[in-house]
Image 1 (tube, rainbow over the protein chains, first blue to last red):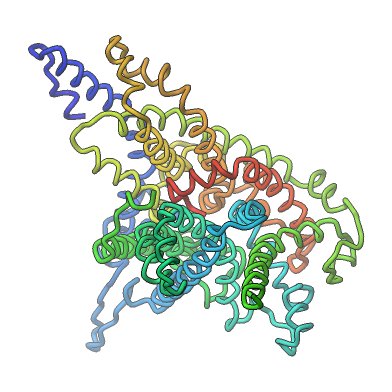
Image 2 (spheres, each protein chain N blue to C red; image 1 turned 120 degrees about the vertical axis):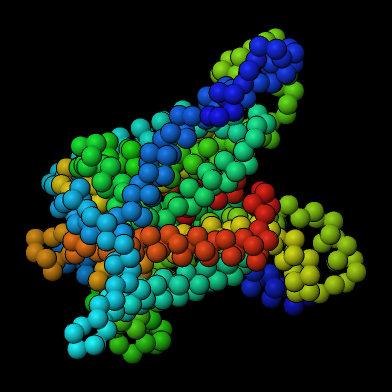
Length: 322
Length: 276
C-alpha cells in the first residue's frame, strides 16, 4: 500500500509514468486478496496466540483475562515448600501427542517417499497401460479423507473386515485383530490409510521431477554399461532431488497437522492422538479454550521451526519443484 | 533371454499390484454399498447380491440430501470467490515487478501450508462475532484460508510462464491493466482456471475440521461431517451399509471429474503442491 500512496506521477516521463501506473494498479489488484487473507488467517492467528495467554473459556470468550504464561507453565510453591509445576509444557498427555505426531509424520513421509519413488519410476517407464495406472493412482487421492477413513475402518473391522479375512486365509495371523481399537495396531492402521491416500501425490510430484531429466543422460549411461542401480543413485536421485525436497516438506507439513483421519479412524485412542486432536479436544470438548489455544500455538511454533530448519539445512529451492 | 522375461513379468506384477491396491478399497466400498441386511456381514470378494436399500435409505431418510446441497453450495461459492480474487492478484504477482513481491509470494505459500488448528480458536471467535456460526457463511468464509493462497499460487505460476509479447501490443495501445487482464489474459487462462477451480473445489468439498467446528446441527453439516457422524439406531450399531452408500455417492462424481481432467489435475498438482 505504501508504494501506491507515495507514487507522485506529476513529473514523470511517459514510460516511467506507465510503469508507476502499473505498480499502483498491481497493489490495487492485490488489496482484496490481502484483506481477505488478513481477516481469515492473520487476525485469527494473532487472536489464537493471544488466547493462549488468557483464561478464556468456550462459553465466555469475551471475558478472557491476561494470565501470562500460566497455560504453558505455572509454578506454585506450597506452604510446605513443595513446588508444583502445571501447564502444557509439563503435561505428559501433550508430550505424548507430540511424540505420536512426530512418529506418525516421519514414518508416513519416509514410506510415502520410498513407495512414491517406486510408483513414479514405474510411471516414467514406457509400457502399455501406463494411462490406466496413472488414472488408478489418482483414485486414492480423489477420495475424501473422511470417506477413505470410513472405507478402511470397514475393511479393518475386527469381526467382518476383509483385511482380517485375507490375512487369516493367507495364514499370516491366527486370530482376528481389532486393528483400530488395539493400542498396538492403531498407529499401524492410521499409517496404512495415510500412506495409501497420500502416496499418489508424492508419486506425481516425483514423476514431474523425473520427466524433467533429459533422456540422453540415460542413453549415455546405457552405452557406457553403467548398472541401472548405480544410474539411479548417481544420476536420477541427484537430479530429482530438488523436486523431492519440495514434495517432502509439503507432505511433512501436512502430516504434522493431521486431524481428520485420526478423528474418524481411531477416535479416543491414546496411541494415535496427535497435536491437532489434542488441541481441538481441549478447545471444544473439555472447555479448556485457553489451554487448547496454547496447544495450537505450540503446534504452530513446532511446525514453523521444523520448516525453517528443513529449508535451511536442505537448501530447498521452491522453484525446483516445477 | 530368460532374465529378460523374468524382469518383464516382475515389472507387470508391480504394475498390477499398484493398480490393485489403489482401487480395491473403493471397489470394496461399492460392493458393500449394494449389500443389505445380513449379507453385509458376509465377507465376499465379488458382488453376490444386489440391493439399493442403502441408497434409498440414505437419500430419503435423515438429512443427507441436505448435506449434499450444503457441500455443493459452499464449495461452489468458495471456488467462485477465490478465483475472482486470485485472477487479479496473480496478474499483479506475475506480470508486475514491485518491491516486496517475492516476500509476498513466500507469505502466500506459507499461508497455504498453514496448520488449520493454529487459527481455530481465533476463527471461532470471529465466526461468533459475525453471527454466522452454524450457517454456510461460516464455512465459505473460513475456507478462504486454504483455497485463496492456493489458487493465487497456481495462477501466478501459470501467468508467469506466458510470454511478454502477448501483453506488449495492449500496453502500446495504452490499455489499462484491468483491460489487459480481462481482454488479453482471461481468454488464455480458461484451462488454468478450470484446473485450479477443480482442485479448490475438491479441497473445499473434503474439508473436515472447520466444518465439524463451525456447524452444529444436522441440517447445516457438510457431507464429510455427515458421513463421520452417521449413526445407527443405537450407539453401538454402526450403519456400515448406509455409510458406504453415502461414501460412494460423494466420491463417484469426484473420481469421474478427476479422471476426465487427469492431465490438467496432474499439472496443477505439481505446480502448486496442494494438500492430498
